[in-house]
Length: 183
Image (tube, rainbow, N blue to C red; front, side, top):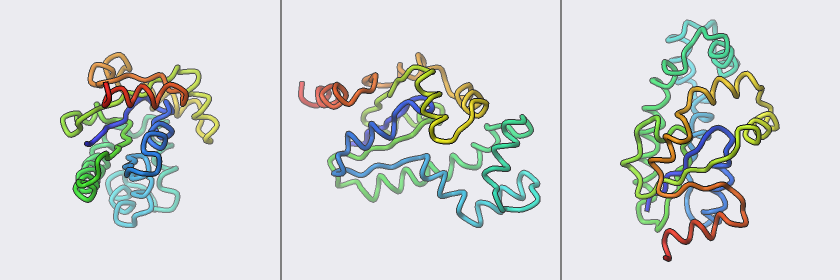
């Protein structure tokens, strides 16, 4: 069973994924996949050429600066990144097809129109002020948070695509999740 986990920036998707998998089931993280892309030489060269950058050193920082200064649209960047990540999602599913559960942590699951790929979609919800606090704790800055948060679809809209909406707390989350399978 392919379980998509989505939610807004810093909502608790990673924590929920780890908690649910209990180190027993595989987890695909779109964020980790993107992070690994920025370590790939051919990917960095593609970005350098596409966005006419002066080199590949600190390319992620350069791209982030361009996005924050509104000299580069996130949509344009996503047109390069998303097809690569989607291909990785499909490969991961194929490699783990014999597992009872496969978890996919994908922040832009709905925005990328991937909902039909999953058997179940879980939406992780957190208040904006809590998400901002978490983001800042991970060395982000408020301006980046606001730009990225604004870029995502409205939570009310995303919730319509999910089977279950969760306000994440370890105390109630797992029992609520299990209730989906053992009614």
